[in-house]
Image 1 (cartoon, rainbow, N blue to C red):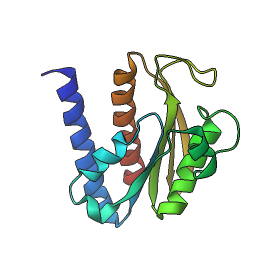
Image 2 (image 1 turned 180 degrees about the horizontal axis):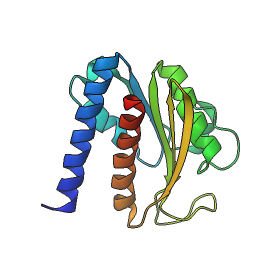
Image 3 (image 1 turned 180 degrees about the vertical axis):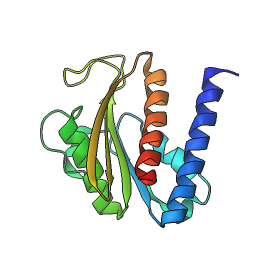
Length: 161
């Protein structure tokens, strides 16, 4: 089996697990995306019974949308402050219990002085906001696939807590 189909199968398993966890707890999920351009929302929306637990997603690709709609502080958008603001504002706007936000430099060029493959993740949940940064190798498509998969893993982790 190819790496792509293995990754898709793993993502499907994560979404099924997330659907089960949210159903068990009656919780809702949302996402805020920049570098993934809606890929996370598309995966979540295709999940089992998603109309019961998926509130929606905000794709804020443009800096002005991040700063305006998602209340990201002025300055770099590939950083902890940006990811946290994206997650927390999305949780409030979409009234979601769990949110994952991603922003980063997908490549092939650096962004905000950060090398390609740098991805900033923030998740919100009942116990506050958590931040994590990853550095992925590969072309932009590889970075995107790894980012989506990790975002789903983070949501399952938070929903399991």
